[in-house]
Length: 191
Image (cartoon, rainbow, N blue to C red; front, side):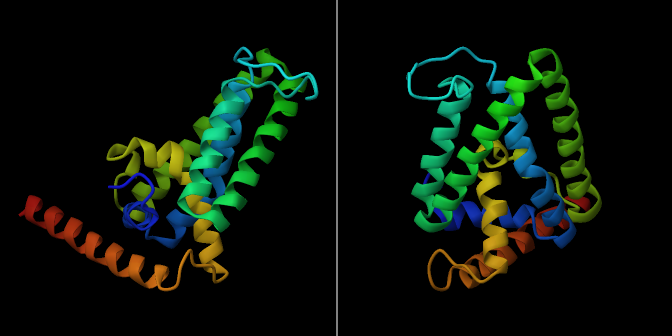
């Protein structure tokens, strides 16, 4: 799978997220997972210092992971990726201010509670509604790197956006074929 092959990545994602309730759960919980992950990364030491930034915005692992996510999203699809990059940086700025005001002793508790709640919700979404194990069991990068972009792309597709003409149709056909193949393997395993 090519690292920047949006269609292949989205087919993989879509095959694990084809139930509407499961998709809705992911839309609610994926971005808070990113946000709270950025909160805990706020407490990593600065790797670079620039005098013109507000003191609360640290160029640490939180910033550089945000930069990586943003650049990757733009490389996947310029338009949707630019929106995802903006949202990712917005989350970084907001999480920096929240983390700074909470302090480490409270922030880690908020992060832990939010992460447990959001991950539990997603596992329930897969188990109860999707009836398929989460994609992170087959592709960890999907869970941590691509999930925020893909739930945003789901929303954008709902309002008519396509990265290129025919994207939605091609992806849907490939997702259906992948699901049929998975169901056949599952059936064969149970017989």
